[in-house]
Length: 310
Length: 317
Image (cartoon, rainbow over all chains, first blue to last red; front, side, top):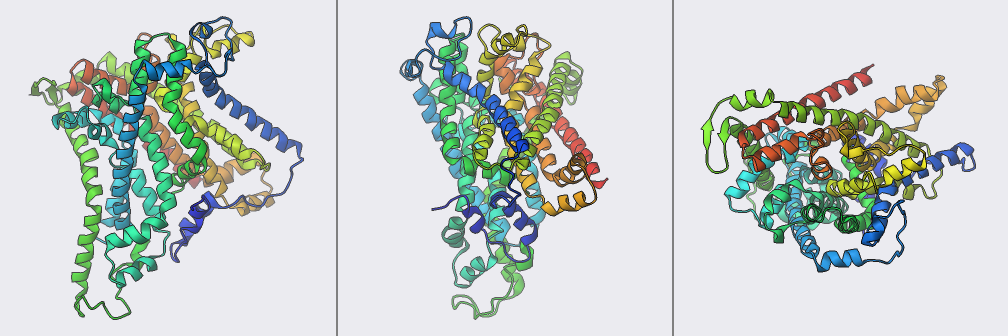
């Protein structure tokens, strides 16, 4: 199995490109540098307490919503404000959202759209990263720079022309239409290329000499070796696609095609001031990414750190 | 770089029997180029489909009086002159820039403080859990963030005024006040983005070689001088990245005001992307909407350019 530490060991740096890549891998993956042990020092305890206090402030808004989602309708509008619910196991708000409203459907839609986005962007990124890592061809560097520059293009700003394209193609209210801006992500190409360049070229060269096709090399040799980067990419991509709102709001015009974020906004607009339900709906929209965060936190953090280490 | 070990290197062993024994170098590299572009084809296809065509299409629309029911009148720069002088545009642009200039510096300073704190921490037990809590809000969608804080900022039943009341401070109007709406949105946003920036800055801090500090310390540098002359210059790359990403995200502000304020009160929190949406989808004025998009890109290039300039100066000094 791959563990986060494999991120370092799975990408041995080849000679000649070890300086920058080496520093980068070390920074992200290396065990903590040995430091002077000053465990008892008062300064350290004070620092830790301050950071801990800050983390409670960070957590408080989420905790407040979670607690509010367990309150009964009359309980939530009590004054003075009650922080804790009477019954910590009152899941009736959640039950109601799935029974009387269509949150089950929204979640399925979000999973389908996110799945399409992950699969297509991953395949495209693997192919593209392989080309940039293991071929020389004319315009390679300028092309890569152009692709990288697209990092800085806010796709949300392009919803107008993209919507006209999708509606012109008759793809509104379809999963493909909903996934359209997410079919390709520059980040995936970038992450995978970085990772592939850490794999010694001799692996590829040896396979080529043996007569293996490049597609076969990519599938059989390279893909398993970049598996840790793929995991990181899938997590980040899941988070981004799951959380988009503007595009699915435009493209999903039938309620049956709503994603979770669109369903949440639509629901809250209709149930104004039913705050017990709105809080529960907010929790439902976050639960998949929260689970992802709790279980795969180290990969997620690693992915963010890696994307910043160029 | 990979160019040093290019695939055109002649194989040292005998070529495989399926291939001709003698082959010119150029023919081989041509085949390699064709194969490379075959692998790149999907990437290039989607770059054109998702970026180039929409960008071009948007610029085209901006020259038209364009309605979804089929009106397509070429009016040259009329959309630009009418939009750029309208109160509607100046208000939205002002709000968006105000939001950006509030959130980016505050967000960077706060995340730098937290990252420096974690970097200086030698207590390891529990540190990763505490760090994770800072990151937790990052996984929430901005839509969810808007609802979280809409409830917290609720003037009657919200947590914010309850806490202020406990401290003996009178309740605030938050999102329902013209003066406080953008600052309230900035609070939401900084909270949501902090963990992301902390992780990037922390990775950068971890990568700084200890020997720089030791050398500077030998020269008699104090902690503030170490921060200013060693840490920040060596953290330059991450700071530029964080600042650029934050500017981009702040300029495309949409979900927070859309959900939490509907752009109000009295338009005090209407953002550029909100106007892009409203003009096209509610008012059927697509040409004007496209002008907002162009303006947004101009802002983005300008502010990112300023950031790069400011931070490059820092390092050269």
